[in-house]
Image (cartoon, rainbow, N blue to C red; front, side):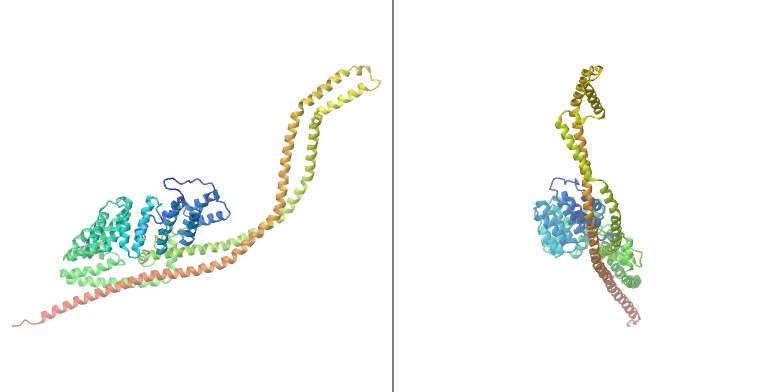
Length: 636
Protein backbone atom coordinates (compact mmCIF):
# COMPACT_ATOMS: atom_id res chain seq x y z
CA UNK A 1 0.00 0.00 0.00
CA UNK A 2 1.33 3.42 -0.93
CA UNK A 3 0.48 5.00 2.40
CA UNK A 4 2.39 2.45 4.40
CA UNK A 5 5.33 2.42 2.00
CA UNK A 6 5.67 6.19 2.01
CA UNK A 7 6.50 6.09 5.69
CA UNK A 8 9.88 4.58 4.96
CA UNK A 9 12.38 7.35 5.59
CA UNK A 10 16.18 7.14 5.46
CA UNK A 11 16.76 6.62 9.16
CA UNK A 12 14.18 3.89 9.52
CA UNK A 13 16.16 1.96 6.93
CA UNK A 14 18.96 1.42 9.45
CA UNK A 15 16.94 -1.03 11.55
CA UNK A 16 15.92 1.67 13.99
CA UNK A 17 13.02 -0.33 15.37
CA UNK A 18 13.87 -4.02 15.40
CA UNK A 19 17.52 -3.44 16.22
CA UNK A 20 16.73 -1.83 19.55
CA UNK A 21 14.57 -4.64 20.86
CA UNK A 22 16.69 -7.51 19.59
CA UNK A 23 19.82 -5.88 20.94
CA UNK A 24 18.14 -5.58 24.31
CA UNK A 25 18.59 -9.33 24.75
CA UNK A 26 22.24 -9.40 23.74
CA UNK A 27 23.52 -5.98 24.78
CA UNK A 28 25.59 -7.46 27.62
CA UNK A 29 27.72 -9.58 25.32
CA UNK A 30 31.26 -8.33 24.79
CA UNK A 31 32.51 -7.62 21.27
CA UNK A 32 33.64 -10.72 19.46
CA UNK A 33 32.14 -13.08 22.00
CA UNK A 34 28.69 -14.60 21.43
CA UNK A 35 26.23 -13.97 24.26
CA UNK A 36 25.28 -16.76 26.63
CA UNK A 37 21.68 -17.76 25.94
CA UNK A 38 21.41 -20.30 28.76
CA UNK A 39 18.23 -19.64 30.72
CA UNK A 40 18.72 -20.53 34.38
CA UNK A 41 15.51 -19.01 35.73
CA UNK A 42 12.26 -20.34 34.19
CA UNK A 43 10.45 -17.06 34.92
CA UNK A 44 12.97 -15.17 32.80
CA UNK A 45 12.41 -17.69 30.03
CA UNK A 46 8.68 -17.05 30.33
CA UNK A 47 9.22 -13.31 29.79
CA UNK A 48 11.45 -14.02 26.77
CA UNK A 49 8.83 -16.35 25.31
CA UNK A 50 6.23 -13.58 25.32
CA UNK A 51 8.82 -11.12 24.02
CA UNK A 52 9.65 -13.20 20.97
CA UNK A 53 5.93 -13.69 20.35
CA UNK A 54 5.69 -9.88 20.01
CA UNK A 55 3.54 -9.74 23.16
CA UNK A 56 5.57 -6.94 24.66
CA UNK A 57 3.02 -5.79 27.23
CA UNK A 58 2.62 -9.30 28.63
CA UNK A 59 6.39 -9.76 28.52
CA UNK A 60 7.22 -6.60 30.44
CA UNK A 61 4.49 -7.10 33.05
CA UNK A 62 5.53 -10.74 33.54
CA UNK A 63 9.16 -9.72 33.83
CA UNK A 64 8.45 -6.94 36.33
CA UNK A 65 6.35 -9.28 38.49
CA UNK A 66 9.16 -11.86 38.45
CA UNK A 67 11.69 -9.19 39.37
CA UNK A 68 9.48 -8.05 42.25
CA UNK A 69 9.42 -11.57 43.69
CA UNK A 70 13.16 -12.06 42.95
CA UNK A 71 12.58 -14.94 40.55
CA UNK A 72 15.21 -13.94 37.94
CA UNK A 73 18.28 -13.70 40.19
CA UNK A 74 20.55 -15.38 37.61
CA UNK A 75 19.63 -12.83 34.92
CA UNK A 76 19.43 -9.55 36.84
CA UNK A 77 21.36 -7.40 34.34
CA UNK A 78 19.90 -9.09 31.25
CA UNK A 79 16.40 -8.69 32.65
CA UNK A 80 17.00 -5.00 33.33
CA UNK A 81 18.30 -4.40 29.81
CA UNK A 82 15.33 -6.25 28.35
CA UNK A 83 12.94 -4.24 30.50
CA UNK A 84 14.67 -1.03 29.48
CA UNK A 85 14.36 -1.94 25.82
CA UNK A 86 10.64 -2.64 26.15
CA UNK A 87 10.06 0.58 28.08
CA UNK A 88 11.83 2.36 25.25
CA UNK A 89 9.46 0.69 22.82
CA UNK A 90 6.58 2.43 24.60
CA UNK A 91 8.32 5.79 24.51
CA UNK A 92 9.18 5.74 28.24
CA UNK A 93 12.63 7.14 27.54
CA UNK A 94 13.05 8.66 31.01
CA UNK A 95 12.39 5.36 32.80
CA UNK A 96 14.55 3.44 30.32
CA UNK A 97 17.34 6.00 30.74
CA UNK A 98 17.22 5.47 34.51
CA UNK A 99 17.59 1.71 34.00
CA UNK A 100 20.60 2.19 31.74
CA UNK A 101 22.09 4.71 34.17
CA UNK A 102 21.76 2.19 37.02
CA UNK A 103 23.51 -0.45 34.93
CA UNK A 104 26.31 1.99 34.19
CA UNK A 105 26.61 2.95 37.87
CA UNK A 106 26.89 -0.74 38.73
CA UNK A 107 30.13 -0.80 36.77
CA UNK A 108 28.92 -2.07 33.41
CA UNK A 109 31.61 -2.59 30.80
CA UNK A 110 32.29 0.21 28.29
CA UNK A 111 30.68 -1.90 25.54
CA UNK A 112 27.47 -2.24 27.55
CA UNK A 113 27.45 1.44 28.44
CA UNK A 114 27.95 2.62 24.84
CA UNK A 115 25.25 0.33 23.48
CA UNK A 116 22.80 1.43 26.14
CA UNK A 117 23.30 5.11 25.33
CA UNK A 118 23.25 4.43 21.59
CA UNK A 119 19.90 2.66 21.63
CA UNK A 120 18.48 5.33 23.90
CA UNK A 121 19.57 7.98 21.39
CA UNK A 122 17.98 6.10 18.48
CA UNK A 123 14.61 5.81 20.16
CA UNK A 124 14.63 9.44 21.28
CA UNK A 125 15.34 10.51 17.71
CA UNK A 126 12.51 8.39 16.37
CA UNK A 127 10.12 9.80 18.96
CA UNK A 128 11.13 13.34 17.98
CA UNK A 129 13.07 14.18 21.16
CA UNK A 130 16.03 15.65 19.29
CA UNK A 131 17.89 17.48 22.13
CA UNK A 132 17.54 14.40 24.34
CA UNK A 133 18.78 12.20 21.50
CA UNK A 134 21.83 14.42 21.00
CA UNK A 135 22.56 14.30 24.73
CA UNK A 136 22.37 10.49 24.79
CA UNK A 137 24.51 10.16 21.64
CA UNK A 138 27.16 12.41 23.21
CA UNK A 139 27.60 9.80 25.98
CA UNK A 140 28.74 7.16 23.46
CA UNK A 141 32.51 6.74 23.34
CA UNK A 142 34.44 4.36 21.08
CA UNK A 143 33.27 0.93 22.18
CA UNK A 144 30.57 0.11 19.63
CA UNK A 145 30.97 -2.77 17.15
CA UNK A 146 31.45 -1.84 13.51
CA UNK A 147 27.80 -2.22 12.46
CA UNK A 148 26.53 -0.06 15.32
CA UNK A 149 29.29 2.48 14.79
CA UNK A 150 28.05 3.03 11.22
CA UNK A 151 24.52 3.52 12.53
CA UNK A 152 25.83 5.95 15.13
CA UNK A 153 27.45 8.09 12.42
CA UNK A 154 24.22 8.06 10.40
CA UNK A 155 22.20 9.01 13.46
CA UNK A 156 24.58 11.83 14.31
CA UNK A 157 24.40 13.14 10.73
CA UNK A 158 20.60 13.03 10.75
CA UNK A 159 20.53 14.94 14.02
CA UNK A 160 22.80 17.61 12.57
CA UNK A 161 20.73 17.89 9.39
CA UNK A 162 17.52 18.09 11.42
CA UNK A 163 18.50 21.59 12.54
CA UNK A 164 20.13 22.63 9.27
CA UNK A 165 23.81 22.06 10.09
CA UNK A 166 24.63 20.44 6.75
CA UNK A 167 28.28 21.40 6.93
CA UNK A 168 28.85 19.47 10.17
CA UNK A 169 26.74 16.57 8.85
CA UNK A 170 28.92 16.40 5.73
CA UNK A 171 32.07 16.38 7.87
CA UNK A 172 30.70 13.52 10.01
CA UNK A 173 29.65 11.44 7.02
CA UNK A 174 32.91 12.13 5.16
CA UNK A 175 34.81 10.36 7.92
CA UNK A 176 32.83 7.17 7.33
CA UNK A 177 33.92 4.41 4.98
CA UNK A 178 31.73 4.85 1.89
CA UNK A 179 32.73 1.68 0.05
CA UNK A 180 30.74 -0.93 1.95
CA UNK A 181 27.24 -1.84 0.81
CA UNK A 182 25.93 -0.99 4.26
CA UNK A 183 27.02 2.65 3.71
CA UNK A 184 24.47 3.38 0.95
CA UNK A 185 22.44 5.57 3.24
CA UNK A 186 25.59 7.32 4.42
CA UNK A 187 26.46 8.14 0.83
CA UNK A 188 22.93 9.29 0.09
CA UNK A 189 22.82 11.56 3.14
CA UNK A 190 26.31 12.90 2.43
CA UNK A 191 25.32 13.74 -1.12
CA UNK A 192 22.16 15.50 0.02
CA UNK A 193 24.07 17.43 2.70
CA UNK A 194 26.68 18.60 0.17
CA UNK A 195 24.00 19.71 -2.30
CA UNK A 196 22.14 21.62 0.39
CA UNK A 197 25.35 23.40 1.41
CA UNK A 198 25.77 25.03 -2.01
CA UNK A 199 28.78 26.88 -0.65
CA UNK A 200 31.15 26.20 -3.53
CA UNK A 201 30.92 24.60 -6.96
CA UNK A 202 33.28 21.96 -5.61
CA UNK A 203 30.87 20.87 -2.86
CA UNK A 204 28.00 20.77 -5.36
CA UNK A 205 30.10 18.72 -7.78
CA UNK A 206 31.16 16.32 -5.03
CA UNK A 207 27.57 15.91 -3.81
CA UNK A 208 26.42 15.31 -7.37
CA UNK A 209 29.10 12.67 -7.91
CA UNK A 210 28.19 10.82 -4.73
CA UNK A 211 24.44 10.86 -5.46
CA UNK A 212 25.09 9.86 -9.07
CA UNK A 213 26.99 6.83 -7.80
CA UNK A 214 24.04 5.92 -5.55
CA UNK A 215 21.63 6.49 -8.45
CA UNK A 216 23.49 4.05 -10.68
CA UNK A 217 24.33 1.24 -8.26
CA UNK A 218 22.69 -2.21 -8.61
CA UNK A 219 19.78 -2.73 -6.23
CA UNK A 220 18.91 -6.24 -5.11
CA UNK A 221 15.71 -5.39 -3.24
CA UNK A 222 12.91 -2.84 -3.16
CA UNK A 223 14.51 -0.90 -0.32
CA UNK A 224 17.65 -0.13 -2.29
CA UNK A 225 15.71 0.45 -5.51
CA UNK A 226 13.65 3.06 -3.67
CA UNK A 227 16.83 4.67 -2.35
CA UNK A 228 18.24 4.75 -5.88
CA UNK A 229 15.07 6.49 -7.10
CA UNK A 230 15.34 9.06 -4.31
CA UNK A 231 18.94 9.80 -5.26
CA UNK A 232 18.03 10.36 -8.91
CA UNK A 233 15.09 12.61 -8.02
CA UNK A 234 17.35 14.66 -5.73
CA UNK A 235 19.90 14.94 -8.56
CA UNK A 236 17.23 15.93 -11.06
CA UNK A 237 15.75 18.76 -9.03
CA UNK A 238 19.21 19.95 -7.99
CA UNK A 239 20.18 20.17 -11.66
CA UNK A 240 16.97 22.10 -12.42
CA UNK A 241 17.76 24.60 -9.67
CA UNK A 242 21.29 24.96 -11.13
CA UNK A 243 19.86 25.68 -14.59
CA UNK A 244 20.99 22.42 -16.20
CA UNK A 245 17.79 20.85 -17.62
CA UNK A 246 19.69 18.40 -19.82
CA UNK A 247 21.39 16.82 -16.83
CA UNK A 248 18.10 16.92 -14.89
CA UNK A 249 16.35 15.01 -17.67
CA UNK A 250 19.09 12.37 -17.72
CA UNK A 251 18.87 11.85 -13.98
CA UNK A 252 15.07 11.70 -13.87
CA UNK A 253 14.94 9.18 -16.72
CA UNK A 254 16.48 6.62 -14.36
CA UNK A 255 13.53 6.70 -11.96
CA UNK A 256 11.15 3.76 -12.31
CA UNK A 257 7.73 4.62 -13.71
CA UNK A 258 6.00 2.58 -11.00
CA UNK A 259 7.64 3.76 -7.82
CA UNK A 260 7.03 6.12 -4.93
CA UNK A 261 9.21 8.76 -6.58
CA UNK A 262 7.72 8.48 -10.06
CA UNK A 263 5.26 11.38 -9.68
CA UNK A 264 8.03 13.82 -8.72
CA UNK A 265 10.25 12.44 -11.47
CA UNK A 266 7.54 12.86 -14.14
CA UNK A 267 6.84 16.41 -13.00
CA UNK A 268 10.53 17.33 -12.94
CA UNK A 269 11.15 15.69 -16.33
CA UNK A 270 8.39 17.82 -17.83
CA UNK A 271 9.85 21.04 -16.42
CA UNK A 272 13.27 20.02 -17.72
CA UNK A 273 11.81 19.58 -21.21
CA UNK A 274 10.04 22.91 -20.88
CA UNK A 275 13.34 24.57 -19.95
CA UNK A 276 14.80 23.05 -23.11
CA UNK A 277 12.01 24.79 -25.10
CA UNK A 278 10.42 21.45 -25.94
CA UNK A 279 6.78 21.66 -24.73
CA UNK A 280 5.80 18.66 -26.86
CA UNK A 281 8.30 16.50 -24.93
CA UNK A 282 7.07 18.00 -21.67
CA UNK A 283 3.54 16.84 -22.47
CA UNK A 284 4.59 13.17 -22.44
CA UNK A 285 5.29 12.87 -18.69
CA UNK A 286 2.72 15.52 -17.73
CA UNK A 287 -0.14 13.76 -19.51
CA UNK A 288 0.81 10.52 -17.75
CA UNK A 289 0.98 12.32 -14.41
CA UNK A 290 -2.27 14.24 -14.89
CA UNK A 291 -4.21 10.97 -15.04
CA UNK A 292 -2.94 9.88 -11.63
CA UNK A 293 -4.41 10.43 -8.18
CA UNK A 294 -5.34 14.08 -7.86
CA UNK A 295 -4.53 13.91 -4.14
CA UNK A 296 -0.80 13.98 -4.94
CA UNK A 297 0.65 17.49 -5.19
CA UNK A 298 2.70 16.57 -8.27
CA UNK A 299 -0.43 15.27 -10.02
CA UNK A 300 -2.24 18.47 -9.10
CA UNK A 301 0.50 20.58 -10.65
CA UNK A 302 0.46 18.39 -13.76
CA UNK A 303 -3.25 19.20 -14.25
CA UNK A 304 -2.36 22.84 -14.97
CA UNK A 305 1.06 22.12 -16.48
CA UNK A 306 -0.57 20.20 -19.37
CA UNK A 307 -2.68 23.14 -20.63
CA UNK A 308 0.33 25.40 -20.05
CA UNK A 309 2.25 23.24 -22.54
CA UNK A 310 -0.64 23.29 -25.00
CA UNK A 311 -0.60 27.10 -24.86
CA UNK A 312 3.09 27.07 -25.74
CA UNK A 313 2.29 24.78 -28.66
CA UNK A 314 -0.44 27.13 -29.81
CA UNK A 315 -3.17 24.54 -29.19
CA UNK A 316 -5.42 27.03 -27.41
CA UNK A 317 -8.59 24.96 -27.79
CA UNK A 318 -7.01 21.97 -26.12
CA UNK A 319 -5.52 24.21 -23.46
CA UNK A 320 -8.95 25.71 -22.80
CA UNK A 321 -10.49 22.26 -22.43
CA UNK A 322 -7.70 21.11 -20.15
CA UNK A 323 -7.98 24.16 -17.90
CA UNK A 324 -11.73 23.65 -17.60
CA UNK A 325 -11.20 19.95 -16.89
CA UNK A 326 -8.59 20.80 -14.24
CA UNK A 327 -10.87 23.35 -12.58
CA UNK A 328 -13.71 20.82 -12.57
CA UNK A 329 -11.43 18.15 -11.07
CA UNK A 330 -10.13 20.60 -8.46
CA UNK A 331 -13.65 21.58 -7.46
CA UNK A 332 -14.72 17.94 -7.26
CA UNK A 333 -11.69 17.09 -5.17
CA UNK A 334 -12.40 20.08 -2.95
CA UNK A 335 -15.92 18.81 -2.31
CA UNK A 336 -14.52 15.37 -1.53
CA UNK A 337 -12.07 16.93 0.90
CA UNK A 338 -14.90 18.78 2.63
CA UNK A 339 -16.79 15.50 2.99
CA UNK A 340 -13.67 13.82 4.35
CA UNK A 341 -13.17 16.63 6.87
CA UNK A 342 -16.77 16.23 8.04
CA UNK A 343 -16.19 12.48 8.37
CA UNK A 344 -12.94 13.05 10.27
CA UNK A 345 -14.77 15.12 12.86
CA UNK A 346 -16.53 11.93 13.99
CA UNK A 347 -14.82 8.99 15.69
CA UNK A 348 -16.09 6.24 13.41
CA UNK A 349 -13.12 6.36 11.08
CA UNK A 350 -10.68 6.02 14.00
CA UNK A 351 -12.49 2.96 15.32
CA UNK A 352 -12.66 1.57 11.79
CA UNK A 353 -8.88 1.97 11.38
CA UNK A 354 -8.29 0.02 14.58
CA UNK A 355 -10.71 -2.68 13.43
CA UNK A 356 -8.84 -3.21 10.13
CA UNK A 357 -5.42 -3.06 11.82
CA UNK A 358 -5.86 -5.50 14.70
CA UNK A 359 -3.16 -6.48 17.13
CA UNK A 360 -2.96 -8.57 20.26
CA UNK A 361 -1.26 -5.91 22.30
CA UNK A 362 -0.06 -2.36 22.35
CA UNK A 363 3.44 -1.69 21.07
CA UNK A 364 5.76 0.82 19.47
CA UNK A 365 6.46 -1.46 16.49
CA UNK A 366 2.82 -1.64 15.47
CA UNK A 367 2.09 0.13 12.19
CA UNK A 368 -1.05 1.19 10.42
CA UNK A 369 -1.10 -0.82 7.20
CA UNK A 370 -4.69 -1.00 5.92
CA UNK A 371 -7.34 1.61 5.31
CA UNK A 372 -10.94 1.20 6.47
CA UNK A 373 -13.92 1.16 4.13
CA UNK A 374 -14.81 4.85 4.40
CA UNK A 375 -15.69 7.45 1.74
CA UNK A 376 -12.61 8.94 0.05
CA UNK A 377 -10.26 6.55 1.83
CA UNK A 378 -7.42 7.82 -0.37
CA UNK A 379 -7.39 11.00 1.68
CA UNK A 380 -6.55 8.91 4.74
CA UNK A 381 -3.52 7.46 2.96
CA UNK A 382 -2.09 10.97 2.67
CA UNK A 383 -2.72 11.51 6.38
CA UNK A 384 -1.11 8.18 7.24
CA UNK A 385 2.04 9.20 5.39
CA UNK A 386 2.82 11.60 8.24
CA UNK A 387 5.13 10.37 10.97
CA UNK A 388 3.36 12.67 13.43
CA UNK A 389 0.02 11.00 12.72
CA UNK A 390 1.48 7.50 12.96
CA UNK A 391 2.96 8.26 16.38
CA UNK A 392 -0.25 9.91 17.60
CA UNK A 393 -2.36 7.02 16.34
CA UNK A 394 -0.14 4.48 18.08
CA UNK A 395 -0.53 6.44 21.30
CA UNK A 396 -4.30 6.45 20.83
CA UNK A 397 -4.35 2.72 20.20
CA UNK A 398 -2.18 2.11 23.27
CA UNK A 399 -4.57 4.17 25.38
CA UNK A 400 -7.46 2.11 24.05
CA UNK A 401 -5.59 -1.07 24.97
CA UNK A 402 -4.87 0.26 28.46
CA UNK A 403 -8.51 1.25 28.93
CA UNK A 404 -9.63 -2.24 27.91
CA UNK A 405 -7.00 -3.80 30.15
CA UNK A 406 -8.10 -1.70 33.14
CA UNK A 407 -11.75 -2.59 32.54
CA UNK A 408 -10.82 -6.26 32.43
CA UNK A 409 -8.94 -5.91 35.70
CA UNK A 410 -11.91 -4.23 37.31
CA UNK A 411 -14.01 -7.23 36.31
CA UNK A 412 -11.28 -9.60 37.47
CA UNK A 413 -11.16 -7.95 40.89
CA UNK A 414 -14.79 -8.92 41.46
CA UNK A 415 -13.92 -12.48 40.44
CA UNK A 416 -10.87 -12.50 42.70
CA UNK A 417 -12.96 -11.21 45.59
CA UNK A 418 -15.45 -14.05 45.06
CA UNK A 419 -12.61 -16.57 44.78
CA UNK A 420 -11.11 -15.26 48.01
CA UNK A 421 -14.44 -15.60 49.82
CA UNK A 422 -14.73 -19.17 48.52
CA UNK A 423 -11.21 -19.98 49.73
CA UNK A 424 -11.96 -18.53 53.15
CA UNK A 425 -15.12 -20.60 53.42
CA UNK A 426 -13.40 -23.79 52.23
CA UNK A 427 -10.55 -23.26 54.69
CA UNK A 428 -12.98 -22.78 57.56
CA UNK A 429 -14.91 -25.92 56.56
CA UNK A 430 -11.89 -28.19 56.12
CA UNK A 431 -9.88 -27.04 59.11
CA UNK A 432 -11.85 -28.84 61.92
CA UNK A 433 -11.72 -32.32 60.28
CA UNK A 434 -8.03 -31.90 59.57
CA UNK A 435 -7.39 -30.83 63.16
CA UNK A 436 -9.34 -33.86 64.38
CA UNK A 437 -7.30 -36.24 62.23
CA UNK A 438 -4.10 -34.60 63.43
CA UNK A 439 -5.22 -35.09 67.05
CA UNK A 440 -5.99 -38.77 66.39
CA UNK A 441 -2.46 -39.33 65.20
CA UNK A 442 -1.23 -39.33 68.86
CA UNK A 443 2.20 -37.88 68.15
CA UNK A 444 3.15 -37.85 71.84
CA UNK A 445 2.18 -41.52 72.28
CA UNK A 446 4.13 -42.45 69.16
CA UNK A 447 7.14 -40.58 70.46
CA UNK A 448 6.94 -42.45 73.79
CA UNK A 449 6.71 -45.79 72.01
CA UNK A 450 9.69 -44.87 69.86
CA UNK A 451 11.70 -43.84 72.93
CA UNK A 452 10.81 -47.14 74.62
CA UNK A 453 12.06 -49.12 71.63
CA UNK A 454 15.27 -47.08 71.55
CA UNK A 455 15.80 -47.74 75.27
CA UNK A 456 15.29 -51.47 74.83
CA UNK A 457 17.72 -51.46 71.89
CA UNK A 458 20.35 -49.69 73.95
CA UNK A 459 19.94 -52.09 76.88
CA UNK A 460 20.05 -55.15 74.64
CA UNK A 461 23.16 -53.87 72.89
CA UNK A 462 24.79 -53.18 76.26
CA UNK A 463 23.90 -56.69 77.54
CA UNK A 464 25.60 -58.25 74.54
CA UNK A 465 23.90 -61.67 74.94
CA UNK A 466 21.47 -61.26 72.09
CA UNK A 467 18.51 -62.19 74.24
CA UNK A 468 16.86 -58.81 73.67
CA UNK A 469 16.81 -59.51 69.90
CA UNK A 470 15.54 -63.12 69.95
CA UNK A 471 12.52 -63.85 67.79
CA UNK A 472 9.41 -65.74 68.93
CA UNK A 473 10.76 -69.17 67.99
CA UNK A 474 14.00 -68.52 69.78
CA UNK A 475 12.16 -67.21 72.83
CA UNK A 476 10.09 -70.41 72.84
CA UNK A 477 13.24 -72.51 72.67
CA UNK A 478 14.82 -70.53 75.48
CA UNK A 479 11.74 -71.06 77.60
CA UNK A 480 11.79 -74.82 76.90
CA UNK A 481 15.51 -75.02 77.78
CA UNK A 482 14.80 -73.16 80.99
CA UNK A 483 11.98 -75.59 81.82
CA UNK A 484 14.21 -78.62 81.08
CA UNK A 485 16.96 -77.24 83.32
CA UNK A 486 14.51 -76.71 86.14
CA UNK A 487 13.30 -80.32 85.75
CA UNK A 488 16.82 -81.73 85.73
CA UNK A 489 17.97 -79.69 88.70
CA UNK A 490 14.84 -80.35 90.73
CA UNK A 491 15.37 -82.60 93.88
CA UNK A 492 14.25 -86.15 93.30
CA UNK A 493 14.36 -85.82 89.57
CA UNK A 494 13.76 -88.93 87.51
CA UNK A 495 17.04 -90.63 86.50
CA UNK A 496 16.00 -90.63 82.84
CA UNK A 497 15.55 -86.86 82.99
CA UNK A 498 18.87 -86.39 84.74
CA UNK A 499 20.47 -88.41 81.96
CA UNK A 500 19.44 -85.62 79.52
CA UNK A 501 21.53 -82.99 81.34
CA UNK A 502 24.32 -82.95 78.80
CA UNK A 503 21.98 -82.73 75.90
CA UNK A 504 20.08 -79.81 77.53
CA UNK A 505 23.38 -78.07 78.27
CA UNK A 506 24.47 -78.58 74.64
CA UNK A 507 21.17 -77.24 73.31
CA UNK A 508 21.40 -74.18 75.63
CA UNK A 509 24.95 -73.53 74.42
CA UNK A 510 23.99 -73.80 70.76
CA UNK A 511 21.05 -71.47 71.30
CA UNK A 512 23.23 -68.93 73.15
CA UNK A 513 25.84 -69.11 70.38
CA UNK A 514 23.20 -68.49 67.69
CA UNK A 515 21.82 -65.49 69.57
CA UNK A 516 25.30 -64.04 69.99
CA UNK A 517 26.09 -64.71 66.30
CA UNK A 518 22.92 -62.95 65.06
CA UNK A 519 23.16 -60.06 67.50
CA UNK A 520 25.22 -57.67 65.30
CA UNK A 521 22.99 -58.11 62.26
CA UNK A 522 19.83 -57.76 64.30
CA UNK A 523 21.11 -54.63 66.05
CA UNK A 524 21.88 -53.10 62.62
CA UNK A 525 18.41 -53.98 61.33
CA UNK A 526 16.81 -52.57 64.47
CA UNK A 527 18.73 -49.33 64.17
CA UNK A 528 17.70 -48.98 60.52
CA UNK A 529 14.09 -49.55 61.47
CA UNK A 530 14.44 -47.04 64.28
CA UNK A 531 15.86 -44.53 61.81
CA UNK A 532 12.90 -45.10 59.50
CA UNK A 533 10.56 -44.55 62.47
CA UNK A 534 12.43 -41.32 63.27
CA UNK A 535 12.00 -40.14 59.66
CA UNK A 536 8.31 -40.91 59.61
CA UNK A 537 7.83 -39.37 63.02
CA UNK A 538 9.70 -36.23 61.93
CA UNK A 539 7.43 -36.02 58.87
CA UNK A 540 4.38 -36.29 61.09
CA UNK A 541 5.73 -33.59 63.37
CA UNK A 542 6.56 -31.36 60.39
CA UNK A 543 3.12 -31.74 58.92
CA UNK A 544 1.63 -31.03 62.32
CA UNK A 545 3.77 -27.91 62.61
CA UNK A 546 2.83 -26.85 59.07
CA UNK A 547 -0.80 -27.35 59.92
CA UNK A 548 -0.41 -25.25 63.02
CA UNK A 549 1.47 -22.57 61.01
CA UNK A 550 -1.12 -22.71 58.25
CA UNK A 551 -3.82 -21.98 60.78
CA UNK A 552 -1.97 -18.72 61.41
CA UNK A 553 -0.64 -17.98 57.91
CA UNK A 554 -3.64 -18.72 55.72
CA UNK A 555 -5.97 -16.23 57.41
CA UNK A 556 -3.13 -13.69 57.20
CA UNK A 557 -2.67 -14.47 53.48
CA UNK A 558 -6.38 -14.11 52.91
CA UNK A 559 -6.28 -10.76 54.66
CA UNK A 560 -3.25 -9.66 52.59
CA UNK A 561 -4.98 -10.61 49.32
CA UNK A 562 -8.10 -8.85 50.49
CA UNK A 563 -6.10 -5.71 51.23
CA UNK A 564 -4.43 -5.84 47.81
CA UNK A 565 -7.81 -6.16 46.10
CA UNK A 566 -9.16 -3.34 48.20
CA UNK A 567 -6.09 -1.18 47.40
CA UNK A 568 -6.27 -1.79 43.65
CA UNK A 569 -9.94 -0.93 43.41
CA UNK A 570 -9.58 2.81 44.21
CA UNK A 571 -6.46 2.93 42.02
CA UNK A 572 -8.52 1.62 39.10
CA UNK A 573 -11.25 4.09 39.94
CA UNK A 574 -8.68 6.86 39.45
CA UNK A 575 -6.86 5.42 36.43
CA UNK A 576 -9.88 4.41 34.35
CA UNK A 577 -11.37 7.92 34.06
CA UNK A 578 -7.87 9.37 33.62
CA UNK A 579 -7.10 7.02 30.72
CA UNK A 580 -10.56 7.75 29.27
CA UNK A 581 -9.82 11.48 29.44
CA UNK A 582 -6.41 11.03 27.81
CA UNK A 583 -7.99 8.85 25.13
CA UNK A 584 -10.50 11.57 24.28
CA UNK A 585 -7.73 14.15 24.24
CA UNK A 586 -5.58 11.98 21.99
CA UNK A 587 -8.58 11.37 19.75
CA UNK A 588 -9.08 15.10 19.33
CA UNK A 589 -5.37 15.45 18.59
CA UNK A 590 -5.64 12.79 15.90
CA UNK A 591 -8.59 14.55 14.36
CA UNK A 592 -6.75 17.86 14.42
CA UNK A 593 -3.71 16.36 12.67
CA UNK A 594 -5.84 14.69 10.01
CA UNK A 595 -8.04 17.75 9.44
CA UNK A 596 -5.01 20.04 9.29
CA UNK A 597 -3.47 17.88 6.56
CA UNK A 598 -6.67 17.86 4.51
CA UNK A 599 -7.04 21.61 5.07
CA UNK A 600 -3.55 22.09 3.66
CA UNK A 601 -4.62 20.07 0.65
CA UNK A 602 -7.65 22.33 0.27
CA UNK A 603 -5.36 25.35 0.31
CA UNK A 604 -3.16 23.82 -2.37
CA UNK A 605 -6.26 23.06 -4.42
CA UNK A 606 -7.44 26.63 -4.01
CA UNK A 607 -4.06 27.91 -5.18
CA UNK A 608 -4.03 25.65 -8.25
CA UNK A 609 -7.65 26.51 -8.98
CA UNK A 610 -6.79 30.22 -8.87
CA UNK A 611 -3.87 29.65 -11.23
CA UNK A 612 -6.09 27.67 -13.60
CA UNK A 613 -8.82 30.35 -13.57
CA UNK A 614 -6.25 33.08 -14.14
CA UNK A 615 -4.74 31.16 -17.09
CA UNK A 616 -8.24 30.52 -18.41
CA UNK A 617 -9.03 34.22 -18.20
CA UNK A 618 -5.84 34.98 -20.13
CA UNK A 619 -6.91 32.56 -22.85
CA UNK A 620 -10.32 34.22 -23.07
CA UNK A 621 -8.65 37.64 -23.23
CA UNK A 622 -6.36 36.40 -25.96
CA UNK A 623 -9.31 34.98 -27.92
CA UNK A 624 -11.28 38.21 -27.44
CA UNK A 625 -8.34 40.33 -28.53
CA UNK A 626 -7.91 38.15 -31.63
CA UNK A 627 -11.56 38.55 -32.58
CA UNK A 628 -11.42 42.32 -32.05
CA UNK A 629 -8.37 42.58 -34.24
CA UNK A 630 -10.17 40.62 -36.94
CA UNK A 631 -13.14 43.04 -36.80
CA UNK A 632 -11.01 46.16 -37.33
CA UNK A 633 -11.14 47.02 -41.09
CA UNK A 634 -7.88 47.23 -42.88
CA UNK A 635 -6.69 50.77 -43.70
CA UNK A 636 -6.82 51.75 -47.38
